[in-house]
Length: 595
Image (cartoon, rainbow, N blue to C red; front, side):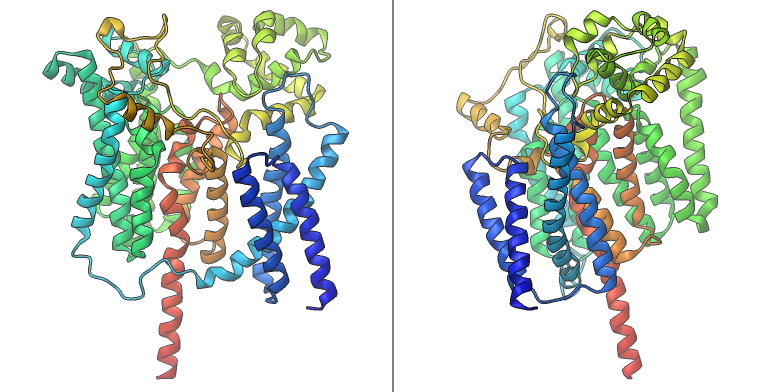
C-alpha cells in the first residue's frame, strides 16, 4: 500500500469519526475518552493493516457494513425525534442529507472493522485445544446453579416479596377474584395461581404467597441458566468464557431484577434459552424421546406464556419442517399438532369455560399508532375517513396524550364497539391513509420500533419498588413491598440499575442486544452456511423479534425481547460450534491424504 493511499484512508477515517462523534452526541467524559481511544486504535489499524480480503470476506464485509450503517444512520435520526410531538417530521430534506452523511461515515468505519472481524474469525479460539472429560458436567451444573441462585437472593430480600407493576397486580386480582381472562395468558395466569395459592395455603399470607412464587421463578431461571453453562462446559468451551457466562447470568442486575419481578415475560424469556438448548441437543443426538418431550414442553410454554407465542411458532414451523425434513413424521405432528391444539383450546374450549378473549386492538398497536400520528399532527384527511375516525377515536383524548414511543394512549382512545363492528372498514381506512401519507406511516413505524434495531437506545427496563396506585395495588390481599435489608444495601442494589452509570447500555440496551443477534446471525451464515441445522436457533429468536416489529405497543420494552438477553452466551458461541467441527474434519482429511 503506497503512502498516498494510507494518508487518504487516514483522512477519510478522521472525517468519518468526526461525523460519528456528532451523530452520537458524545457529551459524557467517559464516552468521550472511550471515543478518542477508539479513534486512535482505528487510525492505527488502518495505517498498519496490509492484508487484503478475499472475495467472500469482502462480500460479507460489505453486506454487514451496509446493514449496520442503515440501522445506525436511520436509528440516530429516528431516536432524536422519539419524544418530540407528532408535528416534527423526520424525513425533511435537511434530515435526509444528514442521514446520508451518517450512513457514509458509518459505512467507512464499519467496513474496516468488519473486514478485520471476518479476516480474524478463522483465528478465534473459543474451545480448549485438549478435549477434557465430561465427568465434572453435573458438578459444573450444580455449582453454577448455586452461584446464580445465591446472587439473586439479595435482590429478592431488597424487593420482597417481588417487583410488582400494574400488570402484576392485575394478574394477582385475576387469581384472587377467580376471573377467567386471556388478556394476560390464561394458562400462564393459572400457572402463577397454582403456586401462589399453594404458598398462601402453606404460609397464610399474601406477601409470602407472592414470595413463594418468586422463589420458584428464581429456581427455574437458575436451572435454565446453569444448563447453558453446563452445555458450554460439555462442548469443551474455554474456561474463561464459561466463567464469563456464569458472571453474565449471576452478576448482571438485569437478570437479578427480572428473577424477582412478577411478570409473565420473565419465564417466557428464560424459556428461549431452554428452547435453544433443546434444538442444539436435537441437532447432535436426534429426536430422542427425551428431546422430543422437552421440545413439546418448551413449545407449550412458548404458546401459553405470552400471546405472541403462537405467531412465533407459526413463523418457525416452515423452517422446522424444511430443516428436519428427514424427520417429518416427528416435526410435522409436533408443530401442526401444537398449533391446532392452541386454536382449539383458546377458541371453543375457552369460550365454553367462560375465558374472556384478548382485545384484538392489543395486536394492532403499530397500525393504530400510524393513524394516530396522522391525526395528532393535524394532517389533511379525506372527509369519509375523517368521519369514520371521529367515531373510532376519542380525538381530543388522542391528541392531548399522543406519544410516538408508546401506543397506550392511542389504543385507549379507540372505541372498541366501533372497531369490533367495522374491522373491514378499519383496515380499508388504514390503507387509505397509508396512500395519502406514506412518509408519516414510515416515520411512525420507525419511532414505534427503533428500540428493537437501533443499538443506542435507553429506556426504563424494570419495574419499581412501591409503585402501587389507588387503582393498582394488592393491599386487600395483604400484599405490599416490605424490604428485608438495610437502607445501605437497598441503595446499593438500586444503584446497580442506574442508567447513568457509564456503559450501562451494555446491560440494558434492547437495540444493542438485537444488533448483536443480527451480527451473530450473519457470522453464523458466514462460517456455516444456510443448511446447518443450528440456524434454527437464530430463526427462533428472529421470529420473536419479528412479532414485536409488527405489534409492539412500546418502542423499546426490554421484557418483550428478554429472550434475546437470556440467550446471549449461546448466540455468540453457536457460530463456532460446527465451524470447529468442520475445521477438525479438514485437518483429519489432510492427515489421511498425507498417510
